[in-house]
Length: 399
Image 1 (spheres, rainbow, N blue to C red):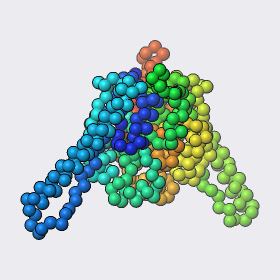
Image 2 (image 1 turned 120 degrees about the horizontal axis):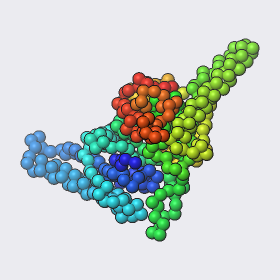
Image 3 (image 1 turned 60 degrees about the vertical axis):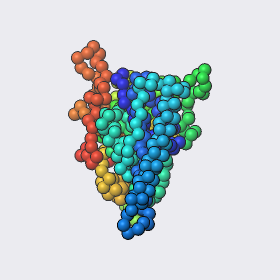
Image 4 (image 1 turned 120 degrees about the vertical axis):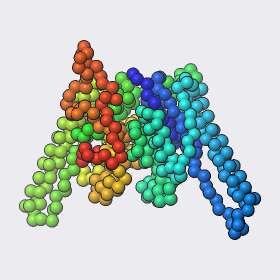
């Protein structure tokens, strides 16, 4: 397998360390190049009441405070990176030091400035996977914090990163589920088999997410859960006469059953694609979930199913809608499923931005390269076409 460049977005919070530990145990390959990056907070410019004419002493005092603040922040960033390097290289993980790179980046200001620095670093360094922790703020808190420039870094990263983003969230019981006991005699170089749930539909974005998960996430002993939510079916209006209401109810049941049947067909095709890529039939579970009325309903159904299945990681595709499009569609119940999962899933979430780049249905054609005996599995660089923020031309009703 080709080596990957994995970016870890670190700070002094426990969430970022948990994200680092979880990824090292579940997703790291021996040849991966690890980029441990933290961002210096923006300077706080305090203005003191001084004489009408600024004196040299006043200017010197303010400059000295800025220098002292920056030195303290650089020292804190160095401590964060040192702790991360110690965790990666000298504890149980034993990653070679030449595969680990550290960097402290400047920030423009606020949470968006911190995230912008991370996104630009990922773009310049051609990062293949970005890992970020999540504080688990509620929707109201995120909205209020964003008004003062202190919104969610994980939100910004999932929508703007040029590569797949892993948002590590969940409590200690979920993040530690399936891990071997770690001690010096039995270092946790590998984790026990994990359950990976891919949220599928019939869009090229979902196809890309499935292919990326098969090539980069799933290990031979892992279990794959393929979940598809049926397309929304309008609820009947039951204020009509009894005979009409009964007919409308029957029609709704038929349409809902047809939506579930179509969802199961998509799930079976996803399972066939996974089997063509070497996943055993006994390692695959398919689920067709009943349709809801909006993206929130679809996201809630996926969260509920993931929790019931005890999955360790959820994977979802993203259309790459811009902030305005997400807000407007959210008002009419057609917002982002990946947004809902990022803030409500009970386990880490991998968001893949991209579409299948072979020009066809990635689930109906064998994923092999002709010309070699028996064919060979294509690399993800040939099956993903990056999309930019706001590219929603191939959007589907779910992702």
